Image 1 (tube, rainbow, N blue to C red):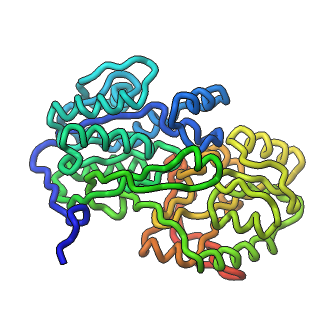
Image 2 (cartoon, rainbow, N blue to C red):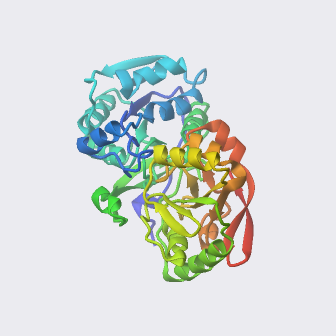
Image 3 (cartoon, helix red, strand yellow):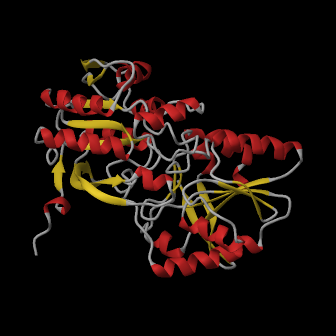
Amino acid sequence: MLLSRRLRPILFMQSVSLKLGLIINPLAGIGGTVGLKGSDGREIVDQALAQGAQPKAGERGLLAMEKLAGIITQPILTVAGAMGAEVLEQAGIAYEVVMQTSAETTASDTYQAVLKLCEHNIDLLMFAGGDGTARDVLDALNACGKADSLPVVGIPAGCKIHSAVYAVTPSRAGELVALLEQGEPLAVKQAEVMDLDEVAYRAGKVSASCYGYLSVPVDDARMQAMKQGGVNHEEIAAQDIASDVVENMEDDVLYFIGAGTTTAAVMAELGLPNSLLGVDVVLNRDLIASDVDEQAILTLLDDAAHKHRTAKIIVTAIGGQGHVFGRGNQQFSPLVIAKVGSRNIMVIATNEKLRSLQGRPLLLDTGSIKLDEELAGIRQIVTGYEQRTLYKLS
């Protein structure tokens, strides 16, 4: 049987300097820390800004570009201002602006930027954003007939990233492109761009479908897999984990319970309502706050410290991808995690979820490289009732 076109890899070998294009969606992920679970649409962006959210996509893009400083020999083609030029300026990388934009950017700017970069015959496109940005890129590449032929590398900067066109962290995106610039031959495959219904997502329902495919380098260590859903026996395993977690909950300890179906089982075991895709707060087995954002968590942590209470975070890993922090739980910002402390983070995951990673480590993408390094290493994962599994975080 012949392999389908999207699964048949081809070899991408760069014998001369890369002609690289860069686009940054400045507003990608802006709703994450304030618990809005997305940033699609001007109304959501305005709401996030009104709640005090700060754009982070530029910082994420800079982490990737720093890996290319001193390596890329051709000026990178990009967009003016926050859509690329500012980040390259900070990274000390030569660039050429091919398109101007207004201060208030939209999805249309991403679409037009892709078309403009394709006119300059780039070899590879890097873009920072989330699933919505990936869809805009795909639409534009389809319009100019290059969706199958132009390789892309996504720099993760969104709230929820189900698409398999993104690197596992911004730094890994930069590392991957640096390898290509240095002549490393890599296969290319067609990877899924996912279409997630943000309205349903904010209502606690994950409704995702495949929107199309983009061409990406094959690198299991640096490129993330598509998020996988669970199966029925996973529910039983999650219930066992939940029984263990609840049985070992301590009095007068503040528990911040993250998003996901495995953590939802903990809330169900407690008999408490659950926001599923947000962060809930439990004290003495009672729900004291639902779907909190970063600022609310920090306020609760300050209050806990004043009352000499310990705080703990309970998180799970995304099936198939393996992310523990940085995908759909940006409320757990570097400042929040630092205040709670590494020793007070509990990771729960079924054995099936760990097996689905096929030996790859659980992933950290907190937004702080230093914090990721501090959290990395072998950790005990709660995988069942009175069951712990040693697994690597990276």
